[in-house]
Structures are given as structure tokens and as C-alpha cells.
Image 1 (cartoon, one colour):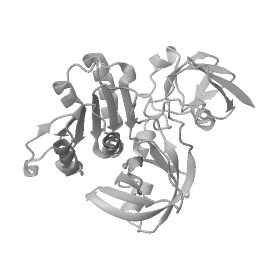
Image 2 (cartoon, rainbow, N blue to C red):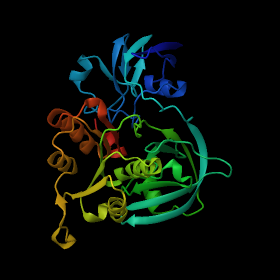
Image 3 (cartoon, rainbow, N blue to C red):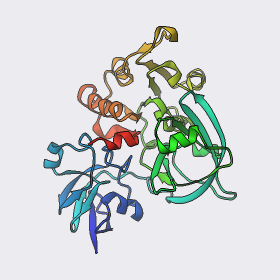
Image 4 (cartoon, one colour):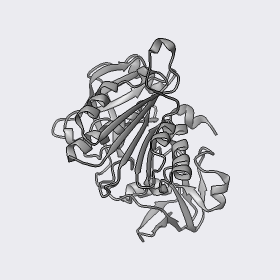
Amino acid sequence: MTFQITVQPSGHHYDCDADETVLAAAIRSGIGLPYGCKNGACGSCKGKVVEGTIHHKPHQARALTDQEKLQGLALMCCAVPEGDVVIEAREVGGSSEYPVRKMPTRVTAIRRAAPDVAILTLQLPANEALAYRAGQYIEFMLKDGKRRAYSIASAPSLGGPVELHIRHLPGGVFTDHVFGAMKERDILRFEGPLGTFFLREDSDKPIVLLASGTGFAPVKALVEHMIHLKSERPVALYWGGRRPQDLYMHALCEQWARELPHFTYVPVISDALPEDGWTGRTGFVHAAVMQDIPDLSNHQVYACGAPVMVDSARRDYVEQCGLPADEFYADAFTTEADLAQP
């Protein structure tokens, strides 16, 4: 049994199987609904059910509150239709420009950028290229049927191997393997490109790039893409970590700040110790943006990192700094521990 999903205001419509989510059917049909984690944790796919009924698969309460449900809002990555449904959602142009593919890849290098951060370099099969937009991610398909998502840290314009930044989460099935048994020349399988976190090139607004930890990975790809475009839009990168070592490509960011005339870099550390010798900004990275740019009404913000950082930035920038809600673009890095929470 299939149902029809109609998207307003575009008028696009597509078929959705009875046991399929609204988002999964949209991706399969090439309809550009916004999304991030696909696991009911980040809230990026939130939209309104205008007509018809849906039921939700398990999701995190902070991604969709009871009050939002009463307002007719739904997480499209967890929403399963019970009949024909009309939804209201802001479609993302270009998100389905490149087909989602399943591909094998070979690990060509594993480099430690910090004690708990590995940079993986992946080589694609000969005569095959992964077409994607800077900021998108891939999902590794593990042998037990589980998946692990990682943002691509290299811009497609570079045309070389795919680069990923992976933080070690002790007890994590995949990251324990990366930091333990994984060797160069190992073969992995992935699906991609996925996600709607990428540069909106039809705007000339100043950009704030906000990252925490390995949320820097897709931000790095965005900066490389803007360099390729020879973009003259003002860009301010705010990168936060608990300790200075968490800013594992600090030197590269300083190089960008020296060489790019429209680029500024503000590193922020939240839990510096005396032995770190840190003399830079301290506190929460999203708050540093508010201190420096109290009026965000004419900006775009691209935020990537821990869900608590992304959620706080979205709320505070819109409510206190005048940022238009539709100019906040986010990719919350959700771990298995995040998804285990109610």
C-alpha cells in the first residue's frame, strides 16, 4: 500500500510506502526536504502536517516537543503516514542534485590529528567519483546492518580522495575499530551523499560558521568550496573545544585568516587548564558569536557540532540576535549515546 505525500508550497508530490517515513520516501523520490541525522535527534527535518495523519517512530523529546506536536509539527525522518498527507516544508534546492549511491572505498591513510581524532583518507574505485556538495555526509554500512554517519571534510572541487574526521568515542563499535584494528587498505562500504547542510550560493549575506569539535569537518569543506568559488562574502569562523588540543587544525584556520581577505577566525576554549597556556577566548563558542555580532539579522549561520551547541545557537540567535529562523543551517553530530536518550 502506498500513500501520496504533497508538499506545500511547492506543490510537489510523491509516493510513500505504508511502512516508510515521509523523509525516506522524499529522498528516494528526489524531493529536497531538509534533514540532518535521519534519526529523530537533530530536528532539521521538522515540518507541519497540514492534512492527513501520521504517527512517529521513536525520537528525542528535545527534537520535537509536545507543544510542537500540538501545533501540527512533525519530524519527517520519523513520521510514517497513515493515509494521504499534505505537509508544509521548505524544500532545499540542489539537495537532490547528486544521486545517492552505495559504493566501496579503500582506506589509504589513517592519521592522528589529536589523541582522540583520526583523519581518514578514502580512495574511491578507479574511474568512479563521488559527486556531492561541500558539507554533505556519507553513511558507512557496517556488517551488523548498523550505520555510522560522517561529514566529508574535503571539498568536491579538490577532486582528490575523500577526507573524514572521526572522534574516538570509547565503546563505540565503529570508532573503537578505527582507533584499534583498522589498517590502511581496508575496504569499507558507504552510501552517500546525504544531508542538506551546504552553502546557499544564491545569497551574498555575511556568513558565520560555528563548529564544535569534529563539527569542523563539514565547515572545512565549506571554506574550501568558497575558496574555489573565489567568494568575497565575509566569513567568520568560530570553532570551539573543551581543550586547545580539540582544535586539531588550528594552524590551518590561522592560515586562512592570514591569506583570505574576507575571513576571520575566532577559536574558543571552554575548559582550559593552567598547563594549557591558553590565552585566547574562553566560554561557550555560540556565546562568543553573540558577544561579537549581537545583531545577526543580516547574516547566515552554518552550525555543526554537538546537539546542545546547535540547539542553543538556534534558539539564542533567533530570539536574542534577530537571526531569521530560515537563515540558520545546521548539522548536529548525534552519537549512539545521543540517540539512546529518550
